[in-house]
Each structure stands twice: as structure tokens, then as C-alpha cells.
Amino acid sequence: MPAIQAVKGARDFYPEDLALRRWMYERIRRVSESYGYQEFDGPFLERLELYAAKSGEELVKEQSFVFPDRGGEMITLRPELTLSLARMIAARSSTLPRPIRWWSFGPFWRYERPQKGRAREFYQWNIDLLGPENAQADAEIASVAAALFRAVGLGPDRIRILVNNRRLVDSQLEALGIPADRRPGLLRAIDRRDKTTAAAWASQVQQEGLSAEQFAGLAAMLENKQAWREAPELTAFFDAAETLGASDYLAYDPTVVRGLDYYTGTVFEARDAGGRHRAVLGGGRYDNLVADVGGDPVPGVGFALGDVVLGLVLRENDALPDLRPSPSQVLVTAFDEASIQDSLRLAVDLRAEGLKAEWYPQADRLPKQLKYADRLGIPIALIAGPDERDAGTVTVKDLRSRQQLQVPRAELGRRLRQMLEPPRGS
Image (cartoon, rainbow, N blue to C red; front, top):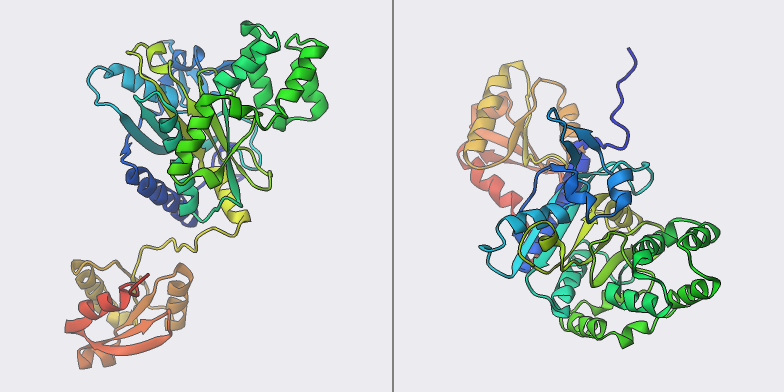
């Protein structure tokens, strides 16, 4: 029988892969909580109608995993979380204290063509601030992103958060004489500008019905790096971001518009400095979304960051951590067949003292057992053979320093905890 392959676009998480995902989660959690955000989550399954009205046709018709349930209702695996968040806020919008600061990290699914930096199943950090309707709230969200990049070792020379404003863009398009009903399609075309060739993009934009003069005006608009100075919302945003210590990561970019229909104000994307990947994160202000799904009006701002692209950027910048997948602090070796029961008891005793101890389950040659511990990054190995049993001791081998010592069995737990304590100042 041929080997059964994983579903296309899904990922296997071997222990070392899961260790990286947990490392990301832990830093995301620390940064989110340092700003006072509460962790939440939504269901993996949602009704398709939740996305149909506000996300845009591309997400609904091309990128979502959609299927009928047994009752005939159309269901989708969640392709994003903002609309689930809006639905949850709408259900309790009259009772939730404001402001609402929520974050989440979990799996999502999009039916896309798998390629480097893009999978059909991925993990995503979502963080949102709801209640305040001002540029300072937008700047706080951007500063959270900057704090995460610092926490994972990506400085502003390696990654940038590019900022624009939908209201500014809308006024620019209005000045070009482009009708309001054509702007959503044009915004989606602008959002895909870096995903296609210049000729293909020009052809796509022309399909939106622009005149030659309007097309020239649009091209000039997308090259104007100083337009933000005429937008009070953006000048206030950059002032607040400087106060928050995030300005070194931020830059105005007129080509950033975000393709989803629900954005209403400031929008942003994070890009690697080399421009080799799609956006590391994307988000912005969505002031009408909670009301649109049936709740009281609650303005909001937030972003989503995917683990796939972040992992690629970390790898290319030599910023990946040196992680060991094994949680074990101690390997209890099996000296010989006669020692197996004693090794089992020793492992049990160590666990009772709060140490993470695993037992090597067969009496292989000792070098093989030590090699196993080395490969998994287990820092300490214990040897308890006949000589140690007679003396009431255990041989403790520190695999980090290659030193070993004899420790009385009664003192073993205390001595191991001392050896495993991180150095002062680390």
C-alpha cells in the first residue's frame, strides 16, 4: 500500500516544529498581556453568511473551505477571526466593559494554492482593541506589533510596519472622480498590486473602468509618500506611535489599502525589509463591523499575524531560537537488566520532587543512552548501577559541561535542582 500523504496545504507538527509554535505563542502571550489584553477564542466552524456580507467576494468564493451541514446550512472553516470577534462582541455588546482588549492564537484555514509562505492551514495571532475611536488606539495596536517584533529579535532594520488610511484613500479616489461603487473593486486591485506583474495589474485596474487620466492619477497617488501629512488622522497616529516607542518600525505607504471590505480608517501591514515575502501581519480600523453583524455600534482596530511567514522571516534573519523539543530535565539510564526496576523507582522519586524525569526503557549500551539524551537536549543523565546501589549514591552526568559527580541518593533532588537553576542574570 502506498504511503498516505497529509492533506494538501496542511502541516505536520513534529516535536521540534511544535516547540517553535509554542515559543511563538509564549512571546505573543507575554506581549499581549503586557498591554492588558485578555485571551479569548472563537469556534473553528462558522456560518458562511457571517463572512458573505463584509469580507469581500475573494475570501468567500475563492479562499474559504465551505460545505453544507446535514441540515443544509452552509458552514465554513474559519478563514479569519475578526468577524467571529465582532459576532461575539455583538452578542454581549451591552454588558461588556469598555474598552475591550482581546487576543487569540489559533488555527485557521484558507483554500489557497500552497506555496512558500502560504499554507491552507495556519496559526494566527489576532489582537483587537474595541471601544475607543481615535488615532491613539490605532497607534497602541501598531505598538503591540512592534513589541512582538522586538521580542523575537526582529529590529526595524529587518521588518517594517507600513501604514495608510482608508478615509484618506477614499478622498483621493473621490478627487480622481472615481465613483463610490467602483472603489471596493479598485481597492482589492491595489491590494494585489505586489502579487502580480505590472502589466497584469494595469490590465486589472483598467477593468474597473478608469479613464487614462484617472489611471495616471492613481499611479501618481500610489507614489506620493507625503500625502499622510494632509491627513489629521495619520499625523495623530504617528505622534502617538512615537510616544509609545514604536515609530522606528513605522512608515507611511500609499499602496497599503487592505483588501477586506470592512476596514474604515487606518490600515497597516508588516513587511520584511528585503521584500521577499507576503505581509507578516495585516489589519486596521473597522468601526462598523459589530453593528453590521447585529450588535450595538462598537468601533474597533486590530491585526492578524500568521505563523508561516513569521517563521520564514525569523529563519532568513538567523533569529530562530535554539529550542529543544524534549521537556525532560533528567534521563535516568538503565545500566543493565538487573537495574531496570531501580531505575524506574528513581524516575518516580524524581517526579515526586517536581523534576521532569524520563527513563530509558531498555538496557542498551550506556553510550547509546547518553547519545539519545544529547540528541534531545536533555541536560542531565543519571547512572545507577551496582556500584552506586552498594554505595547509596547516583552518578550524575552533566551533559552540558561533560562533568560528572557522585551524589548521595538522599540529596539527589536538591542537587539536581541546583544544577538546573539558570545562571544569575540570565
